[in-house]
Image (tube, rainbow, N blue to C red; front, side, top):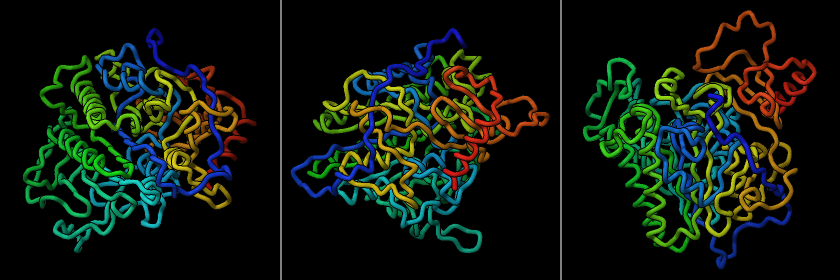
Length: 484
């Protein structure tokens, strides 16, 4: 893998003003036209999947690559977790997932919403300041299903969901495409009752695997991604007719399992069905970009593309295809290592972001809240007790303003089993043994030291554990303090 060429961190750019600066003000000036925002979140796309991050990628990604050519590509962007639900919690709330009731794993089919209705979100922030807001796609944060004993009352409206958290409109599915119930939800109701039962995809874990469970008669796994994209296109079109700016959160269902690309994308890649499905995700990005241009709103629209965690592709599958989905980084989805949480992250904003720029600034998916607030001149209290301290604006990084010394230099993230780590400048401190996730690792029971310490500058592969007890204790204290 050492011969492969990956973008691992180049072209440092100087940035950020504090998002707590005293000259911020509420948006009450109608003559100011704030930009539309489209946030596209891929599901399980790795750092090494797009060609613009990995020239040896076996997946054609012309639209994602073009987005990078027309905007800014980040090489050191991370999710606040290496699995779906906690990362989405961080995106929506601007808080580390340890603030939620979910300390490990993900929410399942009929779990309750893990964000309280009183929590401020990126949607409520923008809606309060004049934005039209919508979420279309995979939710995976729990919902307010009405239940009677052990049965879910699908004919009853949801008591909690996206429309209770600042989104004017929602259309999508409850969790991942391989988790029942297989129904579409529009605002607070299912669009069709699940009167059928799906026996699941393959009987063994294969590309077209999904779990058994209740399903609506017209729910077709093979058409979900296309259906969600059509709804997104319709929503953008309707929003564009009004004078108010809009925010669309578009969490896709792919390239998460089941790996079932539609016919037009089969054989597009050299990385099997996974690669073909990732190519279809690229096609979605292209459709959204093309629509924005057709509607003549591209000059005032920010398009953000990223992923909720690293790729789930196993090491033997990567070797088979010679496609290293997580780039040169160790680990994969679920793991505490870089491959589990370092993700592609591209932002396009015509006339504001210099085309074709690359930044190695450290950013987290919790940073959307502070960044959007910065964008619309809303002051955020960063004082004691504020839950906004987990979110830091990267807007000046996009605009290449101000010195770098005020930008994020550390962040907290965790693995699927709830193993925490602290990134502090070039150092990574892991509070635990092994990957904390899914990769095959040697037995660590013989290791006396319960911690791991890595220097990403000197050992980006995270294969050499440093021995520095003093630094370990310093970073442990910092990590525990942030979590508390």
